[in-house]
Length: 134
Image (cartoon, helix red, strand yellow):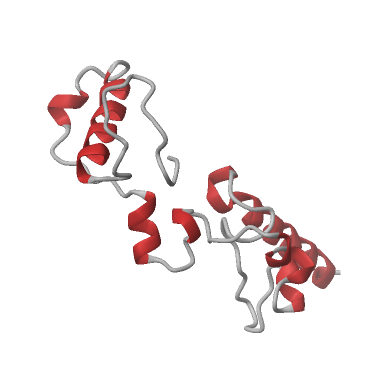
């Protein structure tokens, strides 16, 4: 979702006040209705729903700059070699056996929001295991 909604293509939802409760509810209902096209029994099975807006994210997590849900800033100085710990570009931490993976680490979000970084760590662990076995 956009941090600041600019308009509604269907011209049904009022976006002038940003992510108000009315806009959030209307948007969530629209999404559920669209999913229900492929799952007709969804409305009868939906007991409750909760929508978290970019404003909600930013309010509850200071790292969620502009409501961005995947670790805040993705600026170049927050990635790879420029992290605060030199080993962080390889997902290692100063704690033996503790690895840093997830959407806010290289290669970023996608592949299950952390699958890429998890895969990279597993590759390192497998290489280390092969080397120690002989």
